[in-house]
Length: 311
Image (cartoon, rainbow, N blue to C red; front, side, top):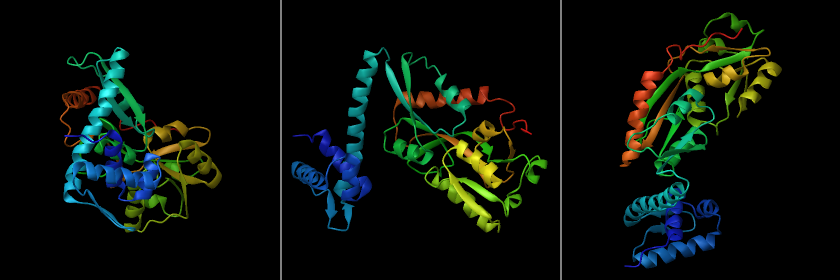
């Protein structure tokens, strides 16, 4: 049996995930004609039609669905083989690829990085940064072993361990009358200039805030979108805005005229989870998740849920 080359597996996986030749080719950094040739070469090699396609639509056949599922595993093992060999050269026995968002509480990241596994004394943790929804996608595809993700809906493709559940924090100017409240309600936000994470930062969180607000009849005077805490700080002061933020980001900018208050809204909470593939059979990953659960429970600060009010 002649086995397909890695480049052919990559072509099939990309086309199966994008279901569009243009997007798949762009992702692989090749032109569409090259992608088409690779798919035809692969189908000829395996003797099966893996895709049904015309100029508008690309669909996986049933054999194609099974092929791509196993191809993902094969590609993952090939990538791990290279990673493992490189790690061995550098003195590490095992490498665990951990995704994290820049919006994740640094305490959670440092806790995971401090984990030592007796069965894997040479473990090296390699960090990858991205937005939470992108990290969830990368874990589901097997590109990452696990990831810390926030405000991402459950999916059967992932096993999810809740590691933190905190309120959204509202960052606002110190001359905003709302600062007299120890905590804020969603209704308090009515008529304010809202500063929200841009949709591409976390689509689910953005939709959740907009959806709950609409149901409650709470509307903003204006809505601004940002990708960083520093951008939010500027808009808070320039437009007397109220920024919906993670606790860590709000705390970072709570100075020079900006303060913060928790949003007391049960339907708008930031749940952070440690995500792994549902079909992951790696002993390393299983041991690490168990150790993470134990350590986070035993070391979580008693007052983690509340920070002193900054002015």
